[in-house]
Structures are given as C-alpha cells and as structure tokens.
Length: 620
Image (cartoon, rainbow, N blue to C red; front, side, top):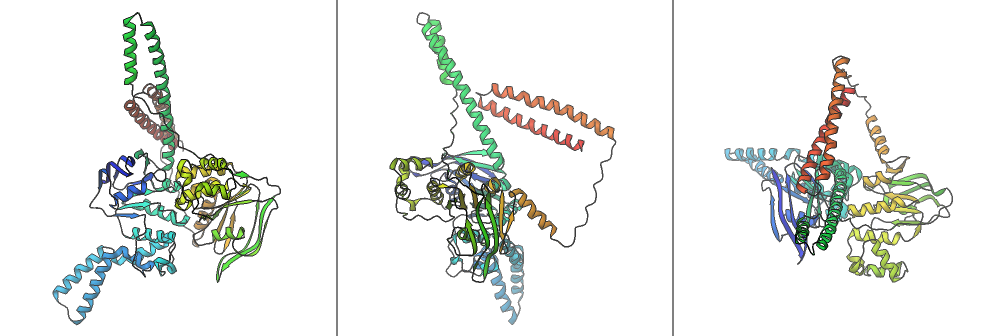
C-alpha cells in the first residue's frame, strides 16, 4: 500500500529558479526512507508540502488520508505556563478528554445511577482502554527515559528550555501521539549518543512509515531501508542504507563517466571519418552522401551528459611545529556548580599526535570541561600546557564580534589580510561571488561554522579543539571537514555525537560520567565493546549456560559430496557473472539494455553469494 506519492512536484520561490522541479517518488507502507541532499536543496520544503504547511506550484501530492502523519521540525507554540509534562500529555488529547468525561460521570453517579449513565460510562471506558489510556503513564515514562528527559525536567516550564531541549521534548510528544507516518527533520541534532541509539531501536521496531532528513551517516546506516537524494530538484533512488548509497553513487558516476568517454571517442572517430569522406567526396557524390549519412547518425546518437564532480572546499589547517613530549597535563582538576559536581580529581596527560574524543550524556559537562582547559571557566586543580603549544578552538555556539559586517569585511579586519587573500580564502570555503557580501548575522548555522573554520584554518596551531564540529553541516561539508582534519598532524581533541566522525578519528576516549572521567586508550568500536561487556557482566545472577547445539546428523561422506557439488555450482555461477562484464561493455551506449544487464548481473551475484554461504555452512 502506498502511504506517500509525489508526482512531478514543482516549487519555486524565485520565478525562473525552481527549488523542486519534476520531483517524483513513492513511499510504501512500513518503509523507512532517508532523504539526503545538500543544505538548501529543498528537503525541509518537501516536508512542509507533505504536511500541508506550504503550497506548491505544480504536480500532485498524495498522503494516505487514513493515516495519521506527524512532523518533528519546527517547535509548536504551547500556552503560557505549560510545563514539559503538559506538553508530553498533549499527545493524549482525546484520551484525556474521555477521562474527564468519565470523572464527571463518576461524580454524577455518586448521587444515583441510571441505565443511560451506565451505558455511557461503559462506552467511555472501552474507548479509554482501546486508546491506550491505562498504559499512558508507562508509555510517557518509557519515552522520557529513552530520550533522557529527567523527572526534574518534566516539571520545568517548557518555555524555559533551550532549543535543543525543546526539540527533544517535541520528539517525545510526537512519538507518544502514535502517528502512522513519521516525518523526522534532523531528529538526532540535539540528542546524546544514548538517546540516538534508543531512537534507532524505536524506529527499527516501529511498524509505521518513516521519512527522515538526516546528515547523521551512522543513524542512516542503522535505520534506512533505502535513500532518496534530492539533487537539482530531482530525485535519485538508492535501494539501501548510507553505506550502500555511497558505493552505488560512486559506481554510477564511474559508469556514466565511462559511457561519456566511450561516446566522445566514438563521435571523435566518426567526425574524423566524415571530414575525410567530405574531402574525398568533392568529386564523388556517393562518398559525399555517405559522409552526410554518418553525420546524421552522429546527430541522432543519444549523448550521455558528462557527470559532474561536486564542488569541494580546498583548504587545510596551518600547523605550528611542536617540540617536546607533553601537550598538556591536568592534575586534580575539579569543577562544580553549587552542590552539583561535574567532574573531580581528574588527572590526565596528553602527548603529541593523539586524537581524543570526549563523550558523555547531555549535561555531564563536556563543553564546560573544554572551557576549563582553555581558561574560559574557573576550576580547581592545575592545568599546564607545553611551552610550544598553540591551540585553535571551534566552539559549539559560534559568536562573531561584529555580526553586522560582511564575510569579506570580517576576513579583512579580523585576519588582517589583503583583499585578494580574503577573496581566495573565502573562495576555498565555497563563499564565492555575491556570497562574500552577505552579513555574517544572516548566515545559517552551517555557514557560520564554515566561516569560523575558514578563519581558524589560517592560524598556525598544533592543538585543535572542536566542540560538535559537524553540527549544522550537510554530509558533503562534513566529509570536507574530515578530509581537512585527516591532513592535520597535531593533537586533536573533540566533543561529538557524530558516531561516524568519532569512529573515524578517535584513538583515545574520555568518558564523562558519575562526576569523573574514564580514560579509554582505544578507538570507538573497542570502547563500545568494553561498555557492552561491562553491561553484560552487571547482573549478579549468572545466566544459565546455553544448551550445546547438536551436530547435524549425517556422515562425513555426505558432507564431502555436498561441498564438492557446491564448489562445482560456484564455479559455474562465477563464469555466469563474469560473462556479464563483456555484455555490459558492449551495451554501454544503450541505457535500457545496460539497466537490464546490470539488474541481471546483480541477481546472478546474489545467487553466487547464496551458494558461497551454503558452502561455508557445509564446511563448518
């Protein structure tokens, strides 16, 4: 059953410049689909159209009218004085109205009961029960525990929360509403790692349909059945998660480039033949007609468009030479706010070349720890830097001294550089043309991060400190930041909830928990393995030993026969798969035939994989 269908959708904000142009796709019931694309390509606009918050200029949009649709994007406005608990309970509006009627009836029935009252009360009770009224408290507690909404926070005024906390509460409300179709716009942006992992489990167990806009590559890998990428107003389809999307996108680029190069070589050869035959055909009409025939055939050839590489930023961190062994030492460092201790008696040493991730739940004090390290917050204990250490810092919340200045003026005044150097550096960070004359205050969060990085990369540093460096960045920008960091040979210290980023760079992990810092001298995968092992070892009562699996019955001869038979079938299937390469190359200019052959080859490869799995099982 189709839950969402979009046909030839067009939306423009400036006449002649379409944001979405002929966008078409279908979402089947129960699918989880990731919507990818650069910032500003129209992803959020698409969601606003699906929910009816925004009109469109052309095309058709169908959302199953029998399904309840919920969007987590903008924070809805709630009445003044609403506590977090009131916002969460608003998900049960109808159930609460039924309970109110039941309570009124109960008051009336104390004075005397009529048959009509009993029938009405019985009907209300059935509706309350079928709507999940008796499970309401349990569900609210479960969602709050999963998303890290504390009991204290549930009694706070909703208006007093930060933007991130409001987003988290609104996500909890949406999940409690029991919607059939979830539209999630950057749902992981303000969640800590535990909350993100809980959300992944929730989505994987969710029986409804999910559309998620996300730049969290690890999250997409865990939840997405397929990917739709919006590029130049159109949709590109990938039948797998993020890792599949990356491999398939590169394969498509390579195939299109190969087709383009083959066509260009063929057209060049034909053009050369035409010119020669025209020359020979000055006195020979037959040769001249043949030349014109070849030229007409060249014009009819369907030409493959040359694939375009996405624009990338080309810059790297300036580096200062580091001499000595110790970058910084922390001895008996502690920080508390009133009676609340964030961390105490921290003793850590950092040496040259280390890459350290600071992890922990929201509110454990990761950003405060960095501010203590840099002297922006007072703390107890001693922090000592090496004599040649120079650090660069990208904070989570970015401020500029003069936000009314343009990007161009900001570079001129704050970096004290020439106009040409300012232009060149901004251009390397994809601020080109009229973009450099935008006021800094009018930039998006991602653009402000990019500008601050542009300014930071000019400095000669050997200690790079980043607080949530990938927040507000699209996937292409994240990959560029990662490429720049890979080339940086100094010490890297960063706070991040982006597991893809952590896994790529962390060689040591500091975990803030229970008022202290645990030091793990390993990468993210091993760190996760250690935590899982500790969690499994916690129960006091040891789990009963699992019964040993019985070996499959049957003699050795039968197993040997099966292995040999499977080996013969694998050889045959490998030959079948290999034969497709020549066919695909021959059909490079015929897109339909090429698509058919690629699908057949994929099916043949799947069959080969199944045979290989059977062979491995037989070997075991």
